[in-house]
Length: 207
Image (cartoon, rainbow, N blue to C red; front, side):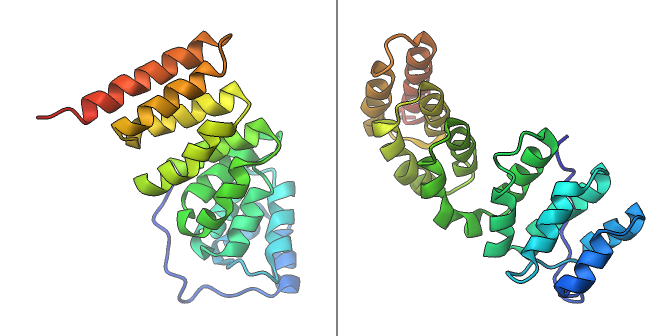
């Protein structure tokens, strides 16, 4: 279930919980107490393990949303580290929550995107393409051009082509078509590349 985004409060007045106090609050038997603790929580390198454990064990969707919102609110490298742990989760709630948090942490995530795009797991690379989509167009191109030239998985290349269709220039069309040509048994990829080429051409046509 996707997170319901709300305006995030300023960090002023939100406590920087010690790991001991935070663990006690986030593991309370009372879900409202856990939710309240999550709403106050600011992630640091010292207490990141506490909120990560809380995310892993939380069964109440509303509390889980508050925990992922704490990552967004904290907006630091420790928050990214926690969210990335759940990008590979088999639990759709955790995976979706992690993606939503990472989309809100684009500045902090940027240094990690190159590594995600070269991850051994194709599913992670596909998700990374979606995360790249929120970056500035020039950054999207810089990150995805090497992937399109070298990735050996058709589904990953398809995800990258879909993102590139939104921002690429006409001089990138040849790369998209060459990428699709590396997968002759995948007609969908050929269709995706040609469709992207049409979109790029239309977007850049003289008015």
